[in-house]
Image 1 (cartoon, rainbow, N blue to C red):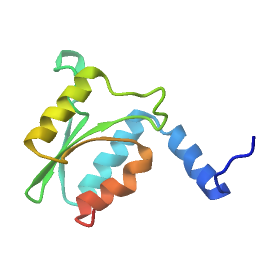
Image 2: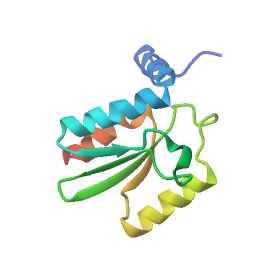
Image 3: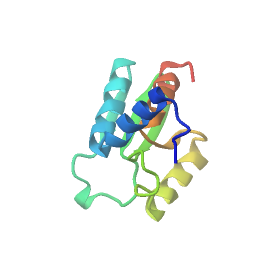
Image 4: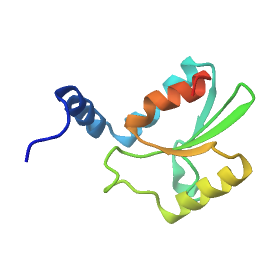
Length: 116
C-alpha cells in the first residue's frame, strides 16, 4: 500500500521515529535553555516517586512539566502513574503539564518562546 505522506513528511516521520526518549529530553531541555528557561530533570529515578514528569521547566512567571515519549505512541504509552501526575498538575496549573513527542518540539518551542 502506498504511503499518503509526501516525501518530506516521510523523512520527518523517519527522523522523529529514530529519536530516543533520552535524546528527545535533551533536545527539549536545550530548547528551553536557549529560550531563557530553567529546567530540572531527575538523573536517576530509581528512588523517585513513580510517574513524575521527565522535565520541569520554570521561567518568565510560568511553569511547565513535560513527560517525554518516543514518537511511536503504540509502543510508548503513559503509565497510570504518569497519567495521574499530569492530571493533578493540570488541575493546579491548567495546560501546563503535557505529554510530548518529537513531532511536538516546534510546538514546545513556540509555547516557551511566548508565541504558542
